[in-house]
Length: 316
Image (cartoon, rainbow, N blue to C red; front, side, top):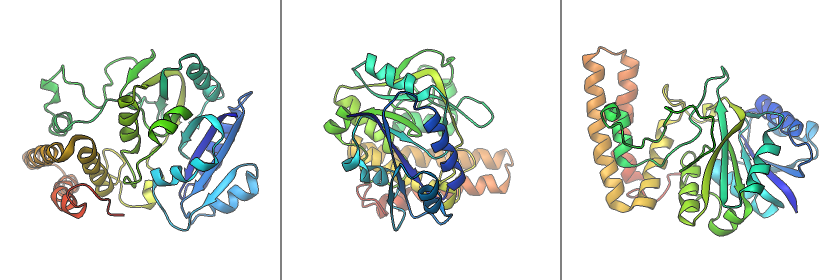
């Protein structure tokens, strides 16, 4: 059995894919590793580049973009590693990243999923150690009222120095090291999510099954963010995410894990948050583009709820 099976989903990011694979190879050292790249019908010659420059990888070519989670699931019958590493094409590992994270997992068998310190292109710390979203903490964040609820656990807590190992609820999927036993027990990604919320849902299932999710700070990954999504739709200014897909996945997640009552509470609180945000934007004379973006998000919510058959079925 190999140490690590690396799964990379490629979608119109040829240059970044090349860089990510080159850095991955430099980080392998004595780790026995295989690499599977699933290309989601890229139009930028990614497949040709992969065939010519990385002949030792296993390449899966999709005729259409099937989404992030579904593409990763396609590789599961091929993997031979004790661990499975999901790596984004815009995530660049350090020379010691693979060895250190595998070593930590070997020494901590109760850890089922591991993430690392994520840095932006400018070296700024990105949210790397996160907690589950709830209707209430999302509402507080979107209204800015979280500053009055200092004891509330928010999705992104950036108030500590991120220099120590910390158990959390979920880690971002750009560098996502998961034990094969976890996949054998709870599967990998739920195919209902086309993009976003896959790793949140997976960590929720893993923790429910008794596994620990851990943030590991002693190596880092530079994560650009949003590169593949640029090919799929407009990116929100704040989160570099596609609003429609993010809203859809959010609704699917709450319905699956918190039931109809949970998703309805989420919708109601989000509707209030949307009115609150628009009122603030108008009073503060925000730029029309900002107002339009927040208005568009507010108008997506309820139609998306009905398009997904009350948050049960994906639209694509």
